[in-house]
Length: 116
Length: 118
Image (tube, rainbow over all chains, first blue to last red; front, side, top):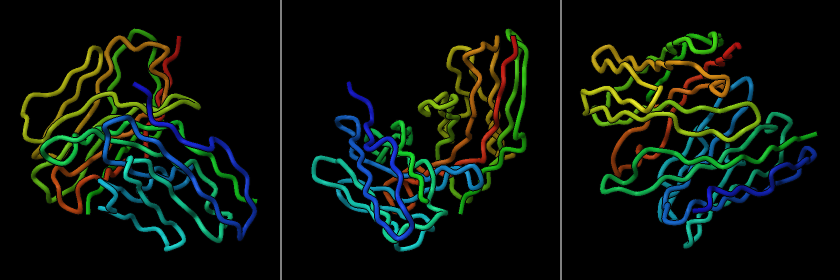
């Protein structure tokens, strides 16, 4: 089974630009979540999608948005980039159970964003 | 809101020895999962071990085992017979179980960087 795939792996943007990151979950996984990882703030939860619905959102400004498609693939978008948005953005998918999910996260390799 | 605390930013251990990483958490939930994830340098984060809160028995996975103390809200990871490949950052994480809007969100600790020395 293919793992979680994130594209692009690396990108450089300038302040004020916008960026879209893509995540393809493991086949059969309906839950996709996004995390921002920085040396200073650690791993911060951005949002989680389940069957195309945003089920949970972290404490990030409205510049951060996401969506999930019917095939469970997900995208996240950051508009009006700031220097502080430089980070590793991790996508993770989770297999379903009767309780909604198993909790276990399968991570992609991440998209490393540098904002200049 | 849940919080996860890892009080040891860095640790080191000699190859073949045993090391224990600490984690405490705070929650008012009764049904949840706890995890340890491993992130090797410049590599993908992977699950090490998982514990369901309703299970009293501590989870084990080969050389990895946990000491889960629900009342004390403590969840430590023991690595036996440490290997060079265990060098990584280890994250303790909490996730609420269920279908509601608070499920599906993992809260992570700040991580413990473990170095295994030859």
